[in-house]
Length: 137
Image (cartoon, rainbow, N blue to C red; front, side):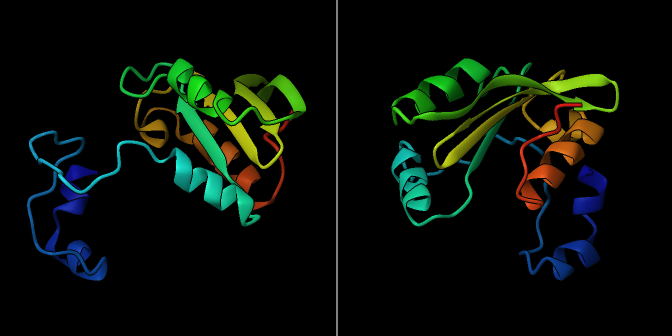
């Protein structure tokens, strides 16, 4: 991916400033980012936009527990209880549907979920795009 995103024609197609791109580079110092995006997520839910939050269950940067603690601050009613979802015959992760928000985990995935578990990520994202919960079988 790094080689691909460093191709000048790819950066031009993305309308990106020509640069040397690396994944998860922590050398950049951002000074204009919010401390939390929880108020933004709340605004999106209030406007009726479908909101999904997902975490790889092996992500050490943004672990599942951190995502769950953050979501719990909203005190949302649960519509569909915590359940396993599937990619074929395998458990792809777990999901819970709240009023206005879905939280899903992806089994065996780290911080960059699609690069760790592309098939599971595709199943989850496809469900989101179809307006459905991740599959139960």
